[in-house]
Length: 257
Length: 277
Image (cartoon, rainbow over all chains, first blue to last red; front, side, top):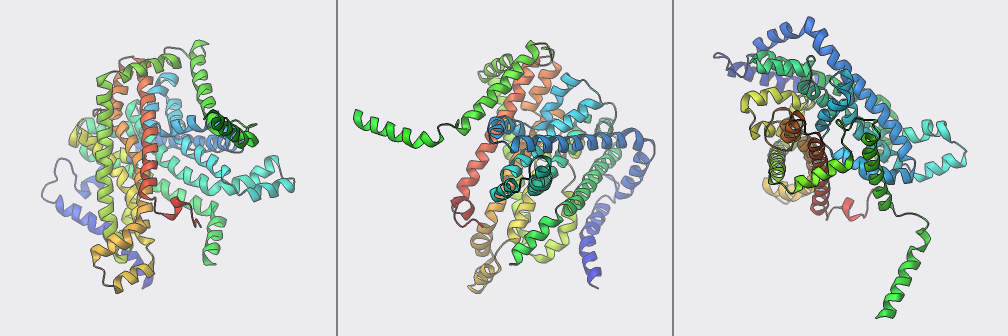
């Protein structure tokens, strides 16, 4: 009964919304909004099959490479800069500038410097998505409890093992907050870089549909992007729960006291 | 007069003495900027990167200062800021109303949770083609993207804020016979305000990104469109100058939002710096 009730809470509103959409488009679909049935059949026609391999998977591949690159580079650079007060002071204004720079403006720049190819798109994703990870890592490392640092030092823990067992774990909650932002920026940049300069990929396909007024196909593309966003956010939440299990447990204990 | 200033100078010196071996924090930042600009200047001059692709910093900054004297530049800045402000304001108002309605009823909170969690991660750029179909290159296209992206940022924060309201305070308000409006104004709003300000600060950054994106991709008027025009017209130094300008605009917006947040929350413990748990 209880699970049934919570299932109802999850499902009722989405079902109502879809019903409302179906009823509203009942009397002959308007030009801009396809009926739900139309959309589903177009979706299957358009994306299941060849397009999956020519457009969707390459896009996702670029996204994964870009985001992983941004996370690895961001954390490494962030550790180097964050552990040194002078390095922090030197880089702060420059990094602040790059964080404030809207990432899409980097697309024309990288088109010039790298040319129009896969490397450019991955470079766009990395150069836009690295800042939240980098700055959060720096902040996470800076904000480590000094007692911890001194304990490490007096026990002679240094070098790699200090980073592995003390610095990284303390900074992880902050880093994960940065990774979350990095994912959504990465997705945005993947789409835009393909809309701006490309002959394949999801962004390109959607713009192509829109230009040829293939409205149901365009909507189905929007749905694909939405699904990718939702799946990414689920994967991230799953990883975050695992990585930060100790941290959430710690907070619960602290709150309970 | 002169003796007192000497004394003051001495005091100042004595105060600064313990840390005089260290360079002040802000100065290092200036060093960082100079080094960054130096590398940028040297890359094209030494030929590591072609000057046609990356003009030296001096040339770009020169073009930027030229831009500062042009009306067209400020018109573009104004258009970008107008879309930014209108979009952000609409998103905040909408999210505030919806957030209050949903947040104050535990039934609605549970019933809308799945829908919100599903709609929120949808990237707003997915709506670009729809915006083009509906509005073309007008400012409404930018607004649609900005409102969609910022709405979720602010809504989530408002929901957190309303959920954070102290039960005892709420029950007290009820037993004193507060009306709905009074409850919102005197109990919920103060608790929610820090969350709301966080949402607005995050939303402000997102709104700028989408304003520029819409201008760059769709071609609605503003700085992004100018960048695109400069790029396709081969005015490379001009393009870099405009990009630096958008970055400076971003820095300015971030700084402004921080000041606004501090002002609005000056009464709050986290800003007063007392009793921070």
